[in-house]
Image (cartoon, rainbow, N blue to C red; front, side):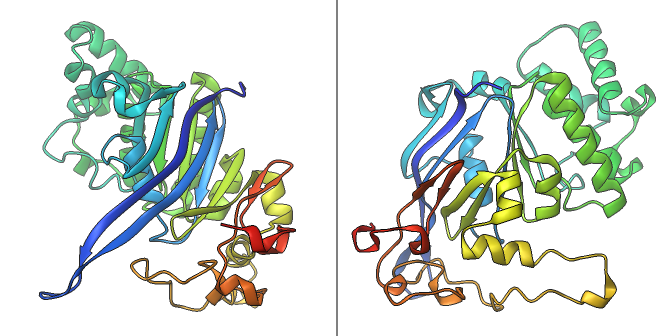
Length: 325
């Protein structure tokens, strides 16, 4: 795996204007707040956090579906905004969350999987048919399903079709946005194993977005934890799962269900209320829910503190909190 980042975000922010009520004044909603990430070629970066923290917004920006308000996205050192959208789609492809809604029910599997080839004008009918059969075989589907429709397939089969559609262009980077959350648990493991095998076989690089830490632990090589539009901790997967530094990361790990029925539902101590992103807390955004809060956490925003394998954004690890920004 190369240390050169194939994908990089530099201080990316995304601000939406939200109007509250008929006569309410528009207010800014900061979905992403100066996010910086590097994705090395061949690795799997797991992006985790609660719903509403900004994970899907980040995915849309990487796919060119949204433009950042400020900051830069770079692919192999070149700004994403300056690259041709058609050419870029050959290098970056998505696998979406719900295979029931991401596949056109009126199109056959053949039409769905070969659509990218037709859009890009690649090959003739015979070569596309060969590519289709090869890709169906790679994702573990028989050639006969080419004439089927999504309604005739199970959830796991549909997600395999979605994977085949994403990979038929031979992309370098795949953005996986909760690709197993809509599937039965028994099917999830099959899809995860397939994604792991395809990474090795095709030399893929994944950004794997999920709220399921067990899934991320299985597939990822590195983890970034997002809270209210910020990356609050980044570390190798082994480090984060064995010795999480940020109190929010620790709370997420404590929320993972265990197979032991006697353990009951875990209490994360986070409470039920997620902070309002239109009116975020002052200082450290996590301080109202933090079990290790200190007085200055309410007034001073923490800065990223470098660690041996990433960074953590918390006053607990900052020797000079008064200088945090």
